[in-house]
Length: 148
Picture 1 (tube, rainbow, N blue to C red):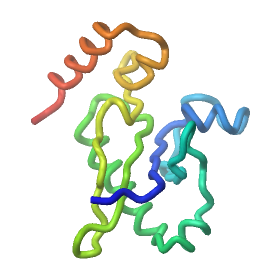
Picture 2: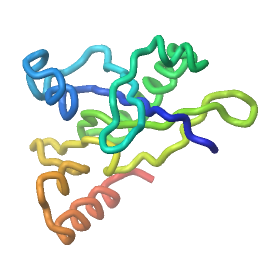
Picture 3: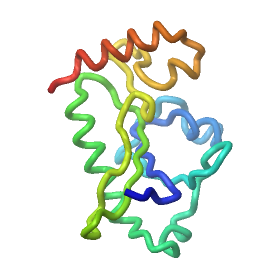
Picture 4: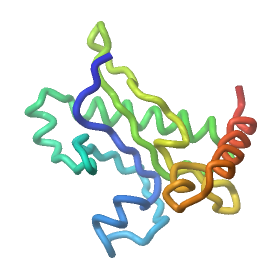
């Protein structure tokens, strides 16, 4: 499916761009109730936050996208228990019949996921300089822990 030029990000905790772009607003790890849903315009070299009014002008039903993202968040959090899903991104777009579909992978490369000890099981491993073997080992172990 053609992907829209923006992504939808669900934040269960303050991490990544939230603490980097808005320093001092929330401490790292702050738990959001309800989860924050934000939108980023996909552009190199780094995606940029986009105001919801631009999305409405583009023809996006922001509330419907937010609802879909939160439903996905609820399902993922239940499926991943006891792991802690801090945040993840999605590409959501209209399907052939006009209904919204998730049009992207959901993997450790597009999320932040922690075990009970707070260890990273996600994209932060390579961002922090972990070696290829370590990342493959952690991600393989993660896949082995997940329910079918």
